Image (tube, rainbow, N blue to C red):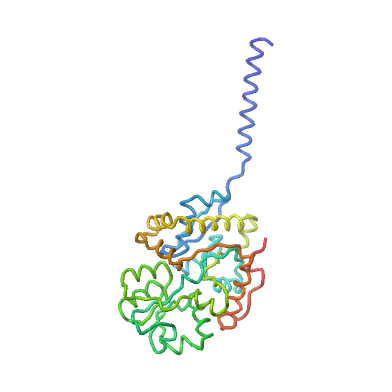
Length: 325
């Protein structure tokens, strides 16, 4: 082979390899995006997704979490109902309501245990839910948390609406009402509860929903679970499994590095240092992502049945509300 022909061969081979590499890049499919709802409040929704993004658990599991932040719970749930987002964490009985109203969603994973839901009081004479009879309780009466509290109360022959004076208030307002002494107790979630008790050591937890639910059912209850729209699943068939895998990475991270999780919460939702860590170590801020289609399906369905029996919903949803691969 002459020098000229060798040079031509070399150049031709290089061009071929370059063309092959460019074709491979052009054929590589972009990483799919899953649109995730979040909130401006320092609660589970933003903390979980912020940890997922900060640690890269989304891209590790083959997708990009595209986060949409909402200023209120009503706007947050509306984003899922209208299809503006693909998935979010919320109350199982609230997802039951949305499904009955025709929103095409499926529950794909568990999230927060009921240990997150507490009643807090200052008066040392108030030691239980029963002690609130004849007193004032600030609570978000439109929330899934209130439905859980009501279901437990009725099982103990306590009618919240009749046996005490209810003051309708979201978690932030309930906190302020108790701090100002306008109510005797407040229904609160973590990490707000830990912040309150840090600010005022006289405040005590008089009711923990996780303990109450175990007493009632014998099982762990779920305050919050993840739901995903059916159209998102049709678009990305393995989206539920990918998302659950990323959530399980968050679960592991929270349990093995609460200091790191605390730093992320401080940087992103501006929690005071140490609050998230304390709530996690106290096992009140308990995040435990498990596939909804596994052993946890029974517990989620049991919550639906109890919500119907308590009169919160007219009937059970169809069984397809819980995702199955």
